[in-house]
Amino acid sequence: MSTTLTELPPDPILERRQEIQKRAAQTIGRRTLLSKIFLTFLVGAFILALVPLGSVLLALLQKGLSSISWAFLHTLPTQPSLVAQNAIGGIGNAIEGSLIIDAIAGLIAIPIAVLLGLYLSESLSRAANFLRAIIEIMTGLPSILLGVFAYEYVVVRLKSFSGLAAIVALAVLMVPVIAKASELAFRGVPATLREAGLALGARSSRVSRGVILPAAMPGVITGVLLSLARAMGETAPLLLVIGASNTWNWNPLHQMAALPLMTYNYSGSQYPSQRAAAWGVALTLVVMVMILSLGSRLVAARMRRERH
Image (cartoon, rainbow, N blue to C red):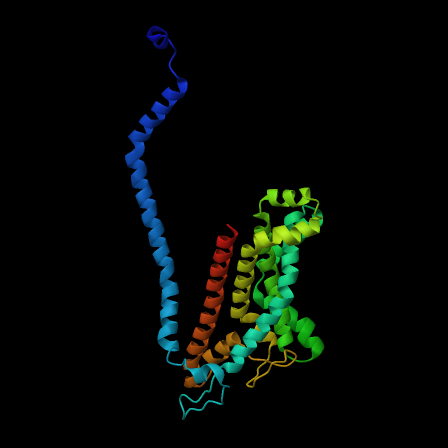
């Protein structure tokens, strides 16, 4: 028996494995050094990217916290003067206007974008490819063009600046962002779920509504909240269409105030008190956007845990 084993030819797989281990042992030092070098570069690039972000946040905190107060957040702005340095009132109407405009724009854009994302994820037709290309183009469009679009088709026809024009501009801005995120979320759902639903005799629409949509909901919600955060911080479309208002106004058919527009106006004001308050307005806007961004991550993470 032992003689038979010694006469067997060598195992090619074992020889190849030994050769690979030998070469790996010869190059382990060089590969370890290269790994440490690239890791150092990556850490350095990350720290370098944090420098401008940290500088902006530090400046906002240093110059904006002095303006933040309860009265600043819930009262109306007043006419500033060169005598009373801090007599600028509050930004309550701008917070109200931003929330109303973004909420209505989201109510318009979310159903359209989610249905569009579902269609694109399930269709490979020419129409779907054409829509996919249009969405890619619209995602990269400068937001000022959407302001021009809303000005031409809403402000000019209504002959008045209004929150409605801002809603139209932001809704058009949000649709491609949500549609793209929704398509990726729907494509990430395993095909076996759809096949199982169809095998049970359910219609395709029922499977999409009852199986695919709940499974993709974390990604869809993340895209929705991130698009809301982006829309809340957009200034360019609002400059052309929203007008100006220093009063409480819940009606989007009239002129309204918004945080991005107030930041822009205050930062270029001739009054030192308003220029100082611009940092407080910007800090308020950044905090609201940060809450939406972090909220999207937390909601998506929780839904993934519950699904698993």
